[in-house]
Length: 229
Image (cartoon, rainbow, N blue to C red; front, side):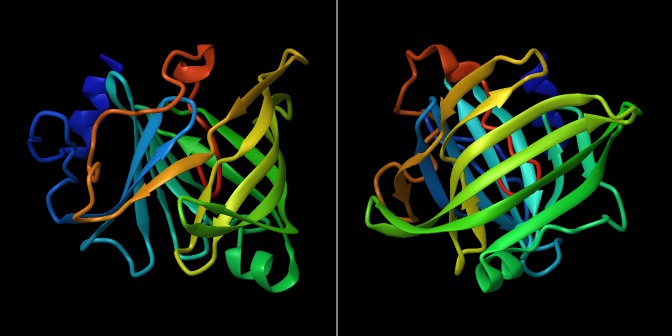
């Protein structure tokens, strides 16, 4: 039922077997196969503001998460399947420009779900000074640490580890790290990209993830509030 609600909410066009198509008015520009049994499609829509980008994540059962960011890598909204949006006037907006220009970016903002619940996220991204090359693509490594709180100030989850950023694409990608879901136990997970696939290449728009699909972590979404929600 969860996946049906997501699909209905975003109204994608019908797909050929083994492929995924973007919603009407949108165009996919990249497919990324990642660890933790995830394939993601990145797309832009004509109705959005310049610089806005969408991502849909699929596991072996199909799409399970959609998210939208702006040109600063700032998280705007997501569906999982409940719609969640960034509240206006964040205390400290996420800024990729600040991260690239100064080497670190702190952020603090609140989120609201259409079911009436909300939360607050605080954290930072910091460039480590290291670069990695994955499938021929050079990415800058970051250190990330953030906590999400409920409206009463109780910690809901904390995540820390490394991610990767591509400044020209204005995109963050997951990396190795861990998440504490509030019980004090750190769950390790690595959602690093493995393959970057572009239009015209084999595997572009594939609906099937390729890596780590027998791992116990395969059902855990790689969650990022502001960059890789």
